[in-house]
Amino acid sequence: MNIKFYYNYTSFPEHLKPLIDLHPIIPTKRSERSWWKNMPSSHEIEDFQKQGWPEPEQAPTMKYCPGVYDFINCGYTVPAWQDFEFFLEDNGNIKWRIPDTLDNSYIIKVHDEPQHKGCPMSTGTKGLLKIATPWMIDTPEGYSTIFTKPFYDHPKGFDVCPGILDTDMDLLTNKQISIFIRIDVKNEVIRINAGQPLLQLIPFKRENFSYEICEPTEEFKTMVKRNYWGTASKFGNSLRVDGKDSLRTKRHQDNKNFEHGK
Image 1 (cartoon, rainbow, N blue to C red):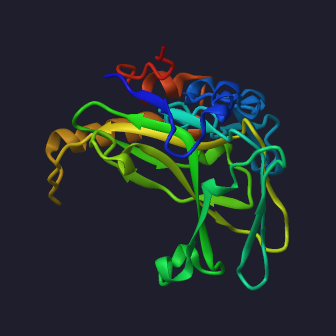
Image 2 (spheres, rainbow, N blue to C red; image 1 turned 180 degrees about the vertical axis):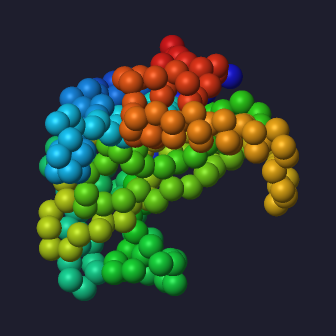
Protein backbone atom coordinates (compact mmCIF):
# COMPACT_ATOMS: atom_id res chain seq x y z
CA MET A 1 0.00 0.00 0.00
CA ASN A 2 1.56 3.27 -1.15
CA ILE A 3 0.62 6.71 0.23
CA LYS A 4 1.41 9.70 -2.00
CA PHE A 5 2.03 13.27 -0.88
CA TYR A 6 2.03 16.25 -3.24
CA TYR A 7 2.80 19.95 -2.98
CA ASN A 8 -0.43 21.88 -2.47
CA TYR A 9 -0.42 24.16 -5.50
CA THR A 10 -4.05 25.12 -4.85
CA SER A 11 -3.14 27.08 -1.70
CA PHE A 12 0.57 27.80 -2.02
CA PRO A 13 2.38 29.55 -4.88
CA GLU A 14 5.33 27.94 -6.63
CA HIS A 15 7.94 30.15 -4.98
CA LEU A 16 7.07 28.76 -1.52
CA LYS A 17 7.73 25.15 -2.51
CA PRO A 18 11.16 25.14 -0.77
CA LEU A 19 9.23 25.15 2.53
CA ILE A 20 8.36 21.47 2.10
CA ASP A 21 11.98 20.65 1.32
CA LEU A 22 13.09 22.31 4.55
CA HIS A 23 10.48 20.49 6.67
CA PRO A 24 9.17 17.45 4.75
CA ILE A 25 6.53 14.97 5.83
CA ILE A 26 8.28 12.00 7.44
CA PRO A 27 7.28 8.63 8.88
CA THR A 28 6.32 9.39 12.46
CA LYS A 29 8.91 6.93 13.75
CA ARG A 30 11.65 9.16 12.34
CA SER A 31 10.47 12.21 14.29
CA GLU A 32 13.03 13.79 16.58
CA ARG A 33 12.09 12.41 19.96
CA SER A 34 14.88 13.10 22.42
CA TRP A 35 12.37 13.19 25.26
CA TRP A 36 11.51 9.53 24.63
CA LYS A 37 15.14 8.46 24.37
CA ASN A 38 15.97 10.22 27.64
CA MET A 39 12.88 8.97 29.46
CA PRO A 40 13.60 6.23 32.04
CA SER A 41 11.79 2.93 31.52
CA SER A 42 11.12 2.42 35.23
CA HIS A 43 10.94 4.26 38.55
CA GLU A 44 11.17 3.29 42.21
CA ILE A 45 8.08 2.77 44.34
CA GLU A 46 8.78 4.41 47.67
CA ASP A 47 6.07 2.60 49.62
CA PHE A 48 8.15 -0.55 49.95
CA GLN A 49 11.02 1.27 51.64
CA LYS A 50 8.64 3.27 53.82
CA GLN A 51 7.33 -0.08 55.10
CA GLY A 52 10.86 -1.05 56.10
CA TRP A 53 11.81 -3.29 53.18
CA PRO A 54 15.51 -2.72 52.32
CA GLU A 55 15.18 -2.87 48.53
CA PRO A 56 13.04 -0.58 46.38
CA GLU A 57 10.46 -2.03 44.02
CA GLN A 58 10.52 -0.94 40.37
CA ALA A 59 7.47 0.10 38.39
CA PRO A 60 7.41 0.81 34.66
CA THR A 61 6.92 4.20 33.08
CA MET A 62 4.90 4.57 29.89
CA LYS A 63 8.05 4.31 27.76
CA TYR A 64 7.51 0.72 26.68
CA CYS A 65 3.73 0.63 26.90
CA PRO A 66 2.74 -1.17 23.65
CA GLY A 67 -0.25 1.11 23.07
CA VAL A 68 1.81 4.29 23.46
CA TYR A 69 4.74 2.89 21.49
CA ASP A 70 2.63 1.97 18.46
CA PHE A 71 0.78 5.28 18.48
CA ILE A 72 3.90 7.47 18.60
CA ASN A 73 5.47 5.48 15.76
CA CYS A 74 2.66 4.84 13.28
CA GLY A 75 1.66 6.92 10.29
CA TYR A 76 3.25 10.12 9.07
CA THR A 77 4.08 13.44 10.70
CA VAL A 78 3.41 16.83 9.14
CA PRO A 79 5.80 19.31 10.76
CA ALA A 80 5.14 23.03 10.92
CA TRP A 81 6.64 24.47 7.72
CA GLN A 82 7.06 27.94 9.25
CA ASP A 83 6.76 29.77 12.56
CA PHE A 84 3.34 30.77 13.88
CA GLU A 85 2.26 32.82 16.89
CA PHE A 86 -1.29 32.96 18.25
CA PHE A 87 -2.94 35.03 20.99
CA LEU A 88 -6.36 34.34 22.49
CA GLU A 89 -7.90 37.41 24.13
CA ASP A 90 -10.25 37.43 27.12
CA ASN A 91 -13.21 38.04 24.83
CA GLY A 92 -12.41 34.91 22.81
CA ASN A 93 -11.00 36.67 19.76
CA ILE A 94 -7.82 35.24 18.23
CA LYS A 95 -4.89 37.15 16.78
CA TRP A 96 -1.95 35.63 14.91
CA ARG A 97 1.21 36.51 13.09
CA ILE A 98 3.72 34.81 10.78
CA PRO A 99 7.27 35.72 9.68
CA ASP A 100 7.24 39.06 7.89
CA THR A 101 9.03 37.66 4.85
CA LEU A 102 6.24 35.20 4.06
CA ASP A 103 3.21 36.36 2.14
CA ASN A 104 0.96 33.41 3.03
CA SER A 105 -1.18 34.77 5.84
CA TYR A 106 -4.17 33.87 3.63
CA ILE A 107 -3.72 30.19 4.52
CA ILE A 108 -5.28 30.85 7.96
CA LYS A 109 -9.05 31.09 8.12
CA VAL A 110 -11.36 31.39 11.10
CA HIS A 111 -14.32 29.10 11.66
CA ASP A 112 -16.51 31.51 13.57
CA GLU A 113 -18.60 30.64 16.63
CA PRO A 114 -21.84 29.90 14.71
CA GLN A 115 -20.04 27.04 12.93
CA HIS A 116 -19.19 25.18 16.13
CA LYS A 117 -21.40 26.68 18.84
CA GLY A 118 -22.75 23.98 21.14
CA CYS A 119 -19.77 21.67 20.72
CA PRO A 120 -18.14 21.20 24.17
CA MET A 121 -14.57 21.44 22.86
CA SER A 122 -15.12 25.01 21.58
CA THR A 123 -16.09 26.51 24.96
CA GLY A 124 -14.12 29.68 25.70
CA THR A 125 -13.17 30.63 22.17
CA LYS A 126 -15.07 32.41 19.44
CA GLY A 127 -13.17 30.81 16.62
CA LEU A 128 -11.31 27.72 15.52
CA LEU A 129 -8.47 28.18 13.06
CA LYS A 130 -8.27 26.28 9.80
CA ILE A 131 -4.72 26.26 8.49
CA ALA A 132 -3.99 25.04 4.99
CA THR A 133 -0.74 23.10 4.78
CA PRO A 134 1.54 22.95 1.72
CA TRP A 135 0.58 19.29 1.31
CA MET A 136 -1.97 17.10 -0.43
CA ILE A 137 -2.49 13.36 0.12
CA ASP A 138 -3.65 10.46 -2.01
CA THR A 139 -4.38 6.97 -0.67
CA PRO A 140 -5.28 3.76 -2.56
CA GLU A 141 -8.91 2.85 -3.03
CA GLY A 142 -10.54 1.68 0.19
CA TYR A 143 -8.19 3.62 2.50
CA SER A 144 -9.04 6.64 4.64
CA THR A 145 -6.81 8.74 6.89
CA ILE A 146 -7.08 9.82 10.52
CA PHE A 147 -5.93 13.42 11.06
CA THR A 148 -4.87 13.89 14.68
CA LYS A 149 -2.31 15.63 16.82
CA PRO A 150 0.95 13.88 17.71
CA PHE A 151 -0.43 13.70 21.25
CA TYR A 152 2.71 12.74 23.17
CA ASP A 153 4.89 15.24 21.28
CA HIS A 154 2.47 18.14 21.74
CA PRO A 155 3.17 21.07 24.08
CA LYS A 156 0.42 22.87 25.94
CA GLY A 157 -1.37 25.93 24.67
CA PHE A 158 -3.20 24.61 21.65
CA ASP A 159 -4.97 21.54 20.37
CA VAL A 160 -5.37 19.98 16.95
CA CYS A 161 -8.96 18.94 16.31
CA PRO A 162 -8.96 15.35 14.96
CA GLY A 163 -10.95 14.08 12.02
CA ILE A 164 -11.14 11.37 9.35
CA LEU A 165 -11.08 11.93 5.60
CA ASP A 166 -11.73 9.45 2.81
CA THR A 167 -8.50 10.40 1.08
CA ASP A 168 -9.09 7.95 -1.77
CA MET A 169 -11.94 10.06 -3.20
CA ASP A 170 -11.24 12.15 -6.30
CA LEU A 171 -12.29 15.39 -4.63
CA LEU A 172 -10.01 18.34 -3.96
CA THR A 173 -11.38 18.77 -0.43
CA ASN A 174 -10.46 15.16 0.36
CA LYS A 175 -6.88 15.59 -0.88
CA GLN A 176 -5.92 18.81 0.88
CA ILE A 177 -4.24 18.45 4.26
CA SER A 178 -5.67 21.12 6.54
CA ILE A 179 -5.25 21.52 10.28
CA PHE A 180 -7.97 22.74 12.65
CA ILE A 181 -6.46 24.37 15.73
CA ARG A 182 -8.06 25.44 18.99
CA ILE A 183 -6.08 27.83 21.19
CA ASP A 184 -6.46 26.73 24.82
CA VAL A 185 -4.68 29.44 26.83
CA LYS A 186 -5.80 33.06 27.05
CA ASN A 187 -3.53 36.13 27.23
CA GLU A 188 -0.40 34.19 26.40
CA VAL A 189 1.50 34.07 23.11
CA ILE A 190 1.36 30.49 21.84
CA ARG A 191 4.25 29.78 19.48
CA ILE A 192 4.61 26.96 17.00
CA ASN A 193 8.13 26.64 15.64
CA ALA A 194 9.04 25.55 12.12
CA GLY A 195 9.88 21.84 12.16
CA GLN A 196 7.74 21.13 15.22
CA PRO A 197 5.46 18.05 14.86
CA LEU A 198 2.05 19.51 14.10
CA LEU A 199 -0.17 16.80 12.64
CA GLN A 200 -0.13 12.99 12.57
CA LEU A 201 -1.67 11.14 9.62
CA ILE A 202 -2.72 7.52 10.19
CA PRO A 203 -4.01 5.73 7.07
CA PHE A 204 -6.34 2.77 7.61
CA LYS A 205 -8.41 0.38 5.53
CA ARG A 206 -12.15 0.94 5.78
CA GLU A 207 -14.08 -2.07 7.00
CA ASN A 208 -17.54 -2.62 8.45
CA PHE A 209 -17.71 -4.18 11.90
CA SER A 210 -20.40 -5.81 13.96
CA TYR A 211 -20.35 -6.40 17.68
CA GLU A 212 -22.14 -8.28 20.39
CA ILE A 213 -22.20 -8.30 24.18
CA CYS A 214 -21.99 -11.89 25.32
CA GLU A 215 -20.70 -14.30 27.94
CA PRO A 216 -17.04 -15.27 27.52
CA THR A 217 -16.23 -18.74 26.27
CA GLU A 218 -14.47 -21.24 28.51
CA GLU A 219 -11.37 -20.83 26.36
CA PHE A 220 -11.42 -17.07 26.92
CA LYS A 221 -11.92 -17.52 30.69
CA THR A 222 -8.97 -19.92 30.82
CA MET A 223 -6.76 -17.41 29.00
CA VAL A 224 -7.75 -14.63 31.42
CA LYS A 225 -7.10 -16.79 34.51
CA ARG A 226 -3.77 -18.02 33.18
CA ASN A 227 -2.62 -14.48 32.48
CA TYR A 228 -3.89 -13.14 35.78
CA TRP A 229 -2.33 -15.79 38.02
CA GLY A 230 0.86 -15.93 35.97
CA THR A 231 1.38 -12.26 36.82
CA ALA A 232 -0.07 -12.26 40.35
CA SER A 233 2.24 -15.08 41.45
CA LYS A 234 5.37 -13.00 40.83
CA PHE A 235 6.92 -10.18 42.83
CA GLY A 236 5.84 -6.80 41.55
CA ASN A 237 2.65 -8.25 40.05
CA SER A 238 1.80 -6.34 36.88
CA LEU A 239 4.31 -3.62 37.73
CA ARG A 240 7.45 -5.51 36.83
CA VAL A 241 8.82 -4.78 33.38
CA ASP A 242 12.04 -6.13 32.00
CA GLY A 243 13.23 -3.58 29.44
CA LYS A 244 11.45 -4.00 26.13
CA ASP A 245 9.76 -7.31 27.01
CA SER A 246 6.34 -5.71 26.86
CA LEU A 247 6.96 -4.73 23.23
CA ARG A 248 7.98 -8.28 22.34
CA THR A 249 5.22 -10.11 24.21
CA LYS A 250 2.22 -7.75 24.23
CA ARG A 251 1.98 -6.62 20.62
CA HIS A 252 2.08 -8.14 17.14
CA GLN A 253 5.23 -7.59 15.15
CA ASP A 254 3.78 -8.04 11.66
CA ASN A 255 2.73 -5.12 9.42
CA LYS A 256 4.44 -2.59 11.67
CA ASN A 257 7.28 -1.43 9.49
CA PHE A 258 6.58 2.13 10.53
CA GLU A 259 9.70 3.49 8.85
CA HIS A 260 8.77 2.31 5.36
CA GLY A 261 8.90 5.07 2.78
CA LYS A 262 10.68 6.32 -0.32
